[in-house]
Length: 472
Image (tube, rainbow, N blue to C red; front, top):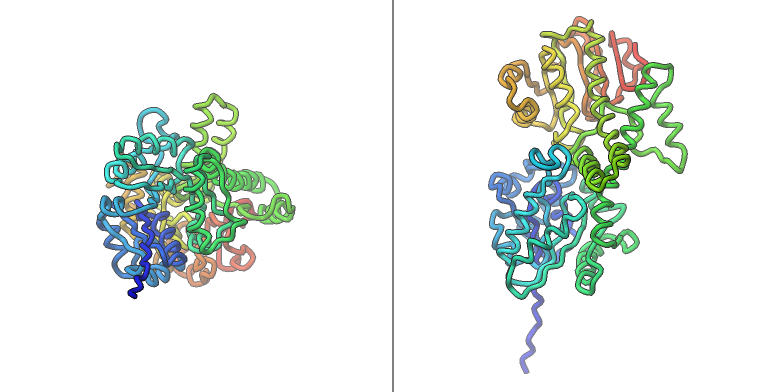
């Protein structure tokens, strides 16, 4: 008698979008789910080539990411430009495409531009030949899942699509740890028989390494709003402590002492209570403005203005930081050299989106300053791109001629009229300021991240300002 072995078909996942969300998320799923074949697709050929290239030069820098990609790539994790083929083959499709703020039309400057999401849904509808679960991974406004469903219905074949909301809760710089040890995994779906089944299938993926008590299931609307609300609450805490730092600057209070006292209250906690030049990143500003727009759309003007103030305080904090630099340089920075230490919006990432350094540098350049930039992870090309994007149609070449780049701190700081710390990279905390002072006539530090101890550096520094702290 011949016994035929049952060969189980491997489960197929496709992720559309090989960016900051798609790449790391799929890498961690591949690591923890060896029974799944995962294909990350993107129309950007250069990006896919980079994912398939030198393991030390991946398009995204995150501590621990390269090690995971090295273990899983070409085993059960694949990167490809063959989008249509991957869609056809997959049972589950994650959508991790960009959702920027609209730059024209209704909601300009606030509402989310869903064009990439809609294009993605159209492509799925066009190429699907079997039942699929579509997972909305990108940060998106309320109702996005319903819009995706509408587009998928243009597929005339007798197949079923279930749309799931599974927002990411990653902090750049700690993304791999956040994925491996999440506070919670949120999965929202239609409250129907098929919808519940789809939610369970997505939950089963995460159960390979996440305990059931951390998997939260909701309806679609609650899941989408929870993502926006989480980012809004975190940003609000930053703007709240930054607003108090201004009061500290004009009185005798010390924001570090105030933060410690506030954070010691167990009802409040100590997270996100560090005063700084302001928050950045791809999510906070975008998501809050989206929330502001949604509130306005539903006629909730008071609620809208409440959340809008969080963004306004953040912009105020950056502008005020520049004003303090100018004041301490006798209100004239024309042709003075300002050294910018740090361009990434936070340490342990090469992401510069909405970085405080962009706004601060733009204002300094407009006031006539010359700047020299050093960041250990951000390329010269990325910095030039950010400056061009910020100036748009203005005299970009004029301002670019006033920017220099350095590959080390000492050369960047030489002959500086001011050294502004705008990213909290660890190497900036241990700078030997006595060496730096030998190459400057007067050493002035503007510490936008409050990472230095004024007592330890006072013998080497002529002038020091920070955020909400004493100065000399």
